[in-house]
Length: 425
Image (cartoon, rainbow, N blue to C red; front, side):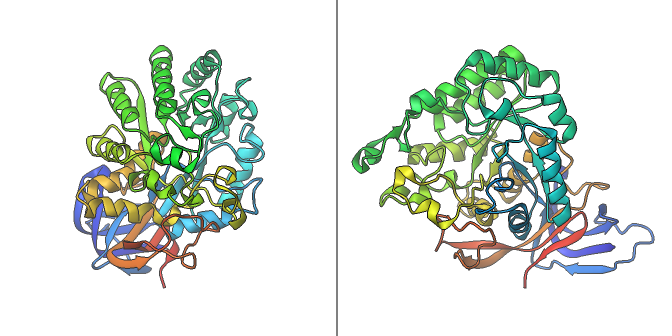
């Protein structure tokens, strides 16, 4: 089909486009922006008057729970939730059941994703077999099967020699290593940010050093091996400073932060709210401001959801026994837009952190409206006010500390490969 999106305010940070333009889509690809292609006749026209049109969002961390935990969510349910929130490309970590450490698991995920067709799913392969931190995975086979990088997810590799060998092996195949930095020995079974609040609540604390020591180690190994490293979910101001310095020194390093770490602090846990139990933990107000500053200065280049849907029972246990994570696809874009309203970043810069920047980290051709690229498009009303409730969340998981929050900005249309995969009623 030929699709015309007319009268919208187009923002495409990758191409420095920011203004009213029409978008022309032919055979699932962007045919032109702003200039009618010869012989173009629209089969479907979308009037985007008063709305912002941007590339489909690219999310660096989404747990689909399938395979292995379909009682929490499925590829179908979560890619549909992604589409309803403007996300057309998402990256899933390898800690599924079974682990993504063989081509067969990768192919299974791709087959199911293509069957439903709501969004593109890009798996990360396991850095070590079974994420056990002992034997290296078959990275060449995983890359050939379609993995865009390798990671040990939330399983820390304590043996730094094995980590060095894994990085050298990844560098051989030009694979980015995705790391959630944490020293598990320093963490010592903690569940909350180490400070006055965790002491008062009787919760074992996780010191900032658990993150900064790990970041320092991985930066040193990156300098030694030359591998590309991407730090997932930084949570401390000091870690952001360290990453910024490493980037300034020319190391091939990038980093992201979750949307919820940009707004929530340890105070969210004041009444043992398990919906605020995340890894890494919500930290101090100073750390939150440091993350925002890192985004504004470019040390942190992407915002992700770190989506982790859970069934209701997973959050009903006592705090330390509850399962960590937030169902956060529904709040990724709205929280980004709140940064604009609060004067932290411009609309273009926020959308860059949600589109072209994460696409560049993944080294995929997404997050842009360039001519000839796949037509993944998000259209949203920046003035639409709404309240997040468990009833209007599309994800199977409703475990969110943002329930009851008032937001401004709502997705109205999402196109994936030129096909309408979501349209608001």
